[in-house]
Length: 190
View (cartoon, rainbow, N blue to C red):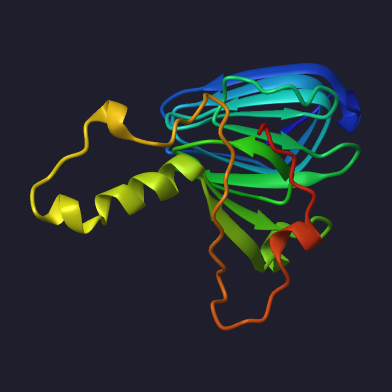
């Protein structure tokens, strides 16, 4: 399915809600603004958004906004100013070549290089949210194995609604990759 204006020209606004589908595949999307809501996963290929697009799946709410980078109450914020992008959601996972400016738990981001078609991509890196990393570290504590439980108020770390990622996992553990900040400008809400 392709979503655009008349004869493939960019539409002013596209709002679509799809129910009873395991996954919605959109082969092309061209619009100034829009809203895509699905009750399954979403695959968006060859998309061009001039201003903003909100995408909702059962597990994630994503916002792609090319003009206003202010923090929003969503799971992930993306940008792709003037450029074609693609994205694919699988539950709480997001695979995309759009730039992620902010994201939080439960989203797990897999970033791919911009400018390369989706079927030719190789994973650049994946990142987990700071909340997820801290929760995993607390759960692995030797004190917890002995039956000791930290009260909720005892955590020395407090996360706001717009916490961004801090940990990094490489998909190619033995590859000598440069640090992520050398390749990608990451905008933080710190």
